[in-house]
Length: 266
Image (spheres, rainbow, N blue to C red):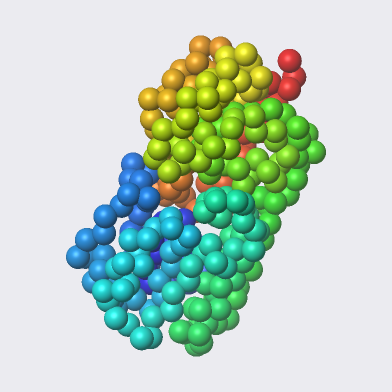
């Protein structure tokens, strides 16, 4: 089985356990999934895969190009964005919504049982444990919402909008600014000025910073936040090595909660 990103590869591995071999093409946080250039080895792995999972919605178009060059009539393809029930406008980062991940994991389970019905009981048991863990993230998000809904924050990218929306945080940064950064473009001068002024005037109580989308503009915001003692909460686009999805999200939510607790006590 081949996953475009290790986030999805981890879900496959947790459900399939000893019954699957998973290759995650993007597993290095230093790589930008948007700009990745696939190679011959990737094509060979995809050609032989029973199941391929990608994010979709333009996030990893290179996977579609690879599959187009590697015919396999028996291959099942999962596009996570299409399976996810909850979408934000022009925002493909669906794995930042735990309910989306449950739906995606359910699709993985269904396809695994189709390919390997003999091990369906193991798959079902593994999925049940995974789902229980992910539902704990929903509980954590609900707790954060109870405590911190309405808190004004700044973002450097759109990736965290799925969770900031669920928590009810008040994102002040212009959406067009975050979208431009997410797509590797320069935001307009008015949007850049607005994002900076919101921070320097301390309207933003924290700054959520995507560590994998770094530009001179986002670095400047980070430096200004640090100079003003405004907490910076780092988030990532690619799951760090050695983690499971649920632990990764839990750690980020814990860091967010700690930062919000600090600023709301003042």
